[in-house]
Image (cartoon, rainbow, N blue to C red):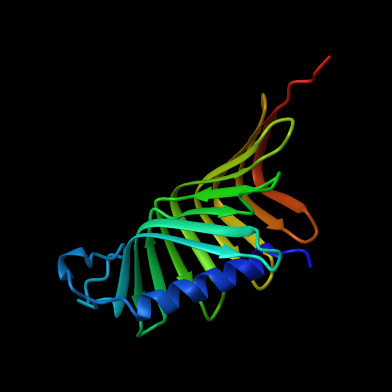
Length: 188
């Protein structure tokens, strides 16, 4: 059976939640969540220097998620992630790598919000495709990614810049929302 990356991503985050629920709180000095919450709320559990791997039915590595820290808040069931680095199908051609400064995952909504120097790179035999922005939302239920921020898409010497992006993953369709500018280099 062919892996469905976003379904596997959901399973990966469920594993994170389970891991967070069973972590021992020996070092309270490490509990510094990424949010600016001044309410004094403390995480129910956390993971430092996490490296979680998820395998598909075929035994191949489907996902790898690394982070400096992840914090689970029971009150609204959110996971805040410092420096998330996600690799989707890392041992296959066309694999995708996503990096950001911060991430916020809402398991009930299957929604991942990434902020701060977000890059998404899809490996390609000819030239890798790179998307850069300051924020990116991944909606796992709809297989949809979006941002309302400035976005740059680069492949080889070609470049597109725009404000806002919407991408329907199953349909392999990307829409750039406004102020679209492009630079293309045609090969002889």
